[in-house]
Length: 193
Image (tube, rainbow, N blue to C red; front, top):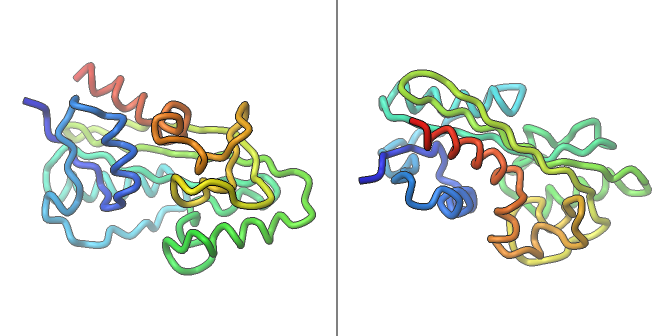
C-alpha cells in the first residue's frame, strides 16, 4: 500500500505534472483531500521561504508528511523579476496572458533575454525539513508559441531546444522542467525512507 503524502496545493496543473512524475510511489493528496480550505499566504521573500510556509503549515496543523513548492520565472534583464511574484506579476493572481504581456513589454528592445525557471520544494517528513531545488535555463521568446503547459510556458524556450515549454508534450516537459528536476531529487529521497 503506498504511503500518503500531501502536496500543499490545489493547482491542478502542478498536481498533474507532479502526479505524472511521482507515479505509484505514494498516494498523493491535495489540500482539498485533507480538508484544508484555508488560503496559505505566501509571505516569504524567497522561493524557499514560501515553500516552507506551505509545508510547515500543513504538517503543524494536520500532522501529515507534506511538501510544498514555490516556483517562478527569473529574468536577468528584469532584475530577477517576476521571481516569487510570477503568478501575480501583472496584479491578478493566475492571469497568465497579462503576466506574459508584462514580461514581453519589459523586454521590448532588450537583447539579453536569458531567464530560468526555478522550483524549490520543502518536504516536512516526520517533522524534519528537506529542501530540493530544480532549475532550467533558457531564453524568453519575442511572442507566444504553443498551446500546452501553463503560466509562462508559451514564451520560455529551454536551452538546447528550438521550441517552448508550451510546444512540448507533458512527457517531454517532465524530462527537463524545473519542477521535474526538483521532483526527481524529492523522489530519490523518498525512495530511501
